[in-house]
Amino acid sequence: MNTLIPGTNRTPTISFQDGVLTITGRSYMENSVEFYAPIRKMVEEHTGDLKVEIGLDFFNTSSSKCLMDLLTLIDKKALNQKCSIRWTYKADDEDMKDSAEEFKELLRNIDIDLEELDE
Image 1: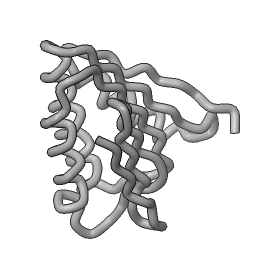
Image 2 (image 1 turned 45 degrees about the horizontal axis):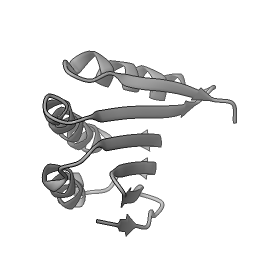
Image 3 (image 1 turned 120 degrees about the horizontal axis):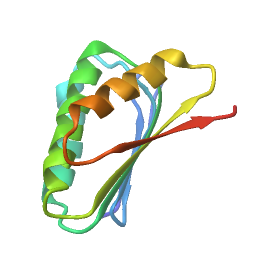
């Protein structure tokens, strides 16, 4: 399944191609649940190896909840299939680094590989 949801100034770009889910940009839309529902469904239905790459500049509280739900789903899938999560953040973005570390602490079956970008 190959999917691309172009980003806007309030929604992230979503790409899901060949088992790689990429979420980049900003996520602070009004209805995060509605936005993330089809992404969650794609992850639920995916049966092969799953690689997740997150590179967000900003997300609001409702997006945070949806991201946590998505990561929890991936954490459960990691019990039965190969999954990985890589979260990149800009070197000067302490808030995003802290957020990624908080998500990382809540997962039990999979680790989030945090990567600082020099941009």
